[in-house]
Length: 323
Ligand SMILES: Cc1cc2nc3c(=O)[nH]c(=O)nc-3n(C[C@H](O)[C@H](O)[C@H](O)COP(=O)(O)O)c2cc1C
Ligand SMILES: Nc1ncnc2c1ncn2[C@@H]1O[C@H](COP(=O)(O)OP(=O)(O)O)[C@@H](O)[C@H]1O
Image 1 (cartoon, rainbow, N blue to C red):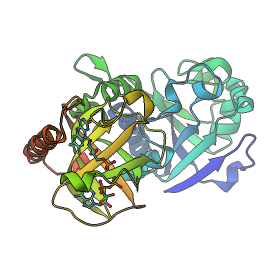
Image 2 (cartoon, rainbow, N blue to C red):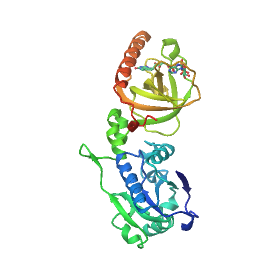
Image 3 (cartoon, rainbow, N blue to C red):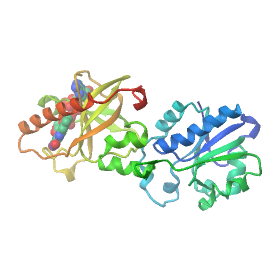
Image 4 (spheres, rainbow, N blue to C red):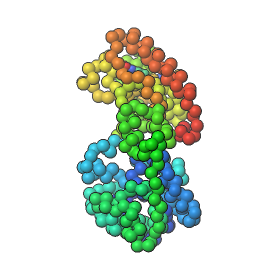
């Protein structure tokens, strides 16, 4: 997949690109609704015998326009998003730098410069997609703005358990720690990436060394507590038991920053400074303040057993993206 970053005003000539079928959206999470839009674009491209493309924006429009900060944290970082889109088999990914001047484009100007100008022959987007200044362009107005230079497919809403699959729903599930329900909406478990940093070196003294993880991007993090996870270290997935929180047994929670640490099962390498990926599988319990270290150790041992039991029920198939 070729990634093309565009800054407004871009200087690409239509003839620099082959004709494309273009899927439009922000696509945070690349969830099952997004996947339907992107796969529809790919199928249409195959039918027409031309290339497929996705256009996304960065940062999120609502952050740039200061409407809300809800999207400052992401489900998929821009890199994760590109990886998921590439897995679907798309040929081009346009990442448009969403700036205030780009946001000022009138709907017709957006269509002229970013659809027709990029050699779009067919557009695919969800039923509620909007474009142009104040989001005034909709899938109803798109045929009028197209100047008959391209056709379009509107993807209807994808529903699961009577709910529209949306980034907002997925964010709420993550924030609540309801991570085991995510494959129904996301099509895979939730994954975050980080670097292993030095902690307080207490883990190894209590028999449970933990890799302390500093997240690379601003991911939405599940509620504090203990979770069964898989963790990818140098290309292999290991079972793990994770604690996210403030370690109240040792600290006054208001004085320390949030920590994310994983005890990796059957593992003893030193992995400081390495990049790791956490696949969040199931919440086990809330974080607690223990009266003694022995009680904490006994509980971590039970957490470890619970995590192993649960992880053994997970089928590590390709659909859940163990790759
Ligand atoms: C599975 C697991 C569960 C944990 N649960 C708690 C807890 O409920 N309360 C708490 O204060 N600390 C909890 N911890 C954090 C430990 O206190 C922590 O791992 C230990 O202090 C080591 O920290 P360090 O890696 O910074 O040295 C847990 C850690 C793990 C791995
Ligand atoms: N089973 C394991 N799980 C997690 N980390 C491990 C494991 N075995 C060894 N390590 C290594 O030891 C470090 C954790 O030791 P710990 O005493 O908890 O120190 P720290 O407080 O710096 O995390 C990890 O960062 C990693 O490099």
